[in-house]
Image (tube, rainbow over all chains, first blue to last red; front, side):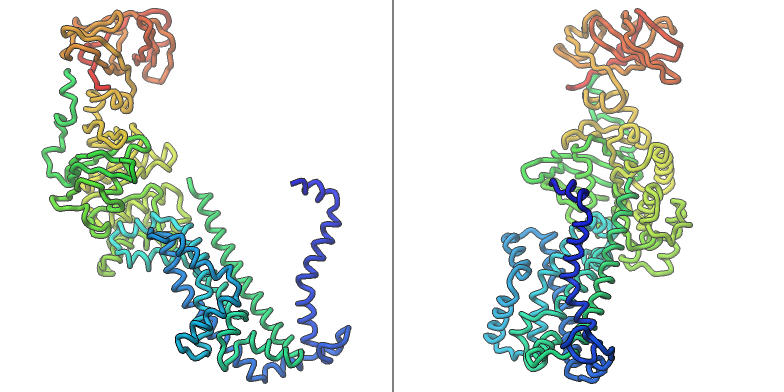
Length: 274
Length: 360
């Protein structure tokens, strides 16, 4: 690339450009947060009169909290389901050789690139065909299966990085394959499991497309917000969005810490390798 | 010395009289169309230190993995103490391995690593603690018991790997190039410790290495592998004195390979000739550098082969001088006692019994 000399020639322009990009990305969020504290609601510029009012209203709003509880349940269930099935798929991809393996790989990873609307619609048709009543259970099944692909990719990467001779050492020392899996393979995958779990949790928490098709009477948080938006924006929505944003940032920081630690460990091992 | 004496089948190895622990019968291993082991037959006696020596790709690690149970032989069988071993899964074999990269468990402490084999086989907690401590003491690592293995140096990791493998009291310990990652000094020290440990414990060691010096220093017997087949099996001294093949002669120690024409019990190469029991034809002889002496240095036996050599190069190596001699157009390596700079033509001799006929 001939980009480098250009960079050195006009660093100020580059800085401005970067600033514009970040503003484009983050200014809406800043506006959202600021207006959640604005007494006069979402209208009017500049915002005036700081208030906690919308947060007070939010904390008294049982419908919102019901939807938060629903989302948490669905997300927790989706994490368990997709990690379990994803781990099995990743193990099969990493270790087993069987006819149709490449097709299997593509099928498992397909939901990653498939539009959510297709996944949602097909799951809905399946539920209808099977006579399943649409409820949080169908949402949980939908998220759990659609996110298997995420779990599989993360865990497969973890398995690929793993030193297989550790498992051989375990067998060699008299551990059965089952013991080796629990005592050596899983502990080695701990960081991948946590990272994948966090990712799946956040993806499930704000999933709309698949959820939309599978939802019964009980709303998840994103659908509750969406339903309220149709009746007009209130700063209460800003308030709940601000909270979601805060929690997401915390989760991302945790995930980043885990990543950094696992990277650090690898770098350390690389240095110590003779 | 006749070439027949140097065949592996006739090796009067000291350990043969002992009870056979491991028996490898006609074992072959193919990966796809590539045959990495070609009908290996080998017996290992109880308490023996046997080294599988060979270059990379000779199949030595594959043979080790077959014995450990990580690979299945394509044909042939392996028996331990008379019973089939190759049909058992690795965790049912009384064989433990020290891996080349140690393969310690990074999520466990040193003590937990060493206790692992006992824990998974359901040994009582009180016994585990005692045996793990004994094993750690044996390798002088008891003060590191609580450390993480990732914090240890290569030599320390090696010791932990050894303790972890020995704590199960295996009948046979497999060691896959365990010293190759250590620096030269530590390596020498660990060689001594390994040998001492093996003698004290009386456990059979099957050691894999590509380093011939290491093999000579440690082993009761060496099994030399080349391209998936056994080239020669014997004690280091036997193989050194009577290499069966030119490969064995060159791989174990330095040697001169002299191509001769044998007719009527006389081997001829240029101006050199000596008596041999080899049959007529083209015969290759191995002549160790230290078997060549300077006539001026001492008494010469009556049957010695005498020749004149021009000193082309001299390398001083402490106790000896390494010479490169030009003898009727060919170059011979010689090692003579250190005696200061030599130059020009000198008269040398060797005993016909030191010229060992080898197969190509």
